[in-house]
Length: 237
Image (cartoon, rainbow, N blue to C red; front, top):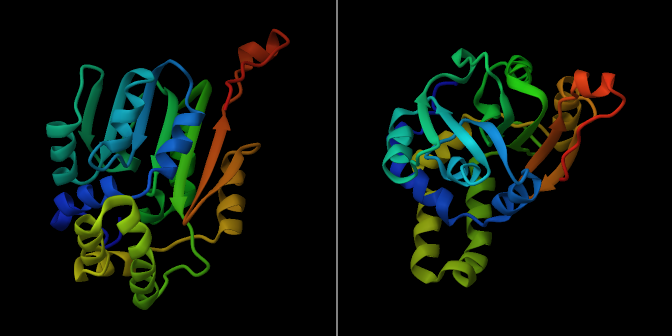
């Protein structure tokens, strides 16, 4: 993670912000998940909002994040009998048992070597398993601060309609705060086209989806044993 990208200094506010964001990504994710699976990894889990959702579909879910304050929130608010949270750098995290699902949302642009991160995640997917990866995209690598401020102002009417005036006012304050804008100034995004080229080079045959300011990939790792028997296991999207 590059300097300036840590969420530690405003972890509580960031978790509140994440909870007030529109649920389009969460809704799309729910449509991609199998009814039931064995093991899932939430890579860059933050305070565990997606981890908690995965727990309803998998017997064991691991949430990994480099931010100890966010993991502490996850452990307090979003634990469960089949959920475990780990403070770890993503590239240092290893598990020889592998996972039926590797999930990551708005995390990978923080890593200095995207290709290495994608290869690392692919190596954690079991045969027949899924990778669902979501990240922010933009027309330029680092949009200027005024773009984010203007976007925050444009979101106010919709936020008021969704959440009411009080919550909308808090969202505007957070989105235009110095700590959040400083964080965004350290981000480096891919364009949609570059996202698809980069991710397809590691996850060939994956499906892509536009998700507002983000882009998503769904990829199934082929099962060599099943192919050898003349068929391939496929999950419904």
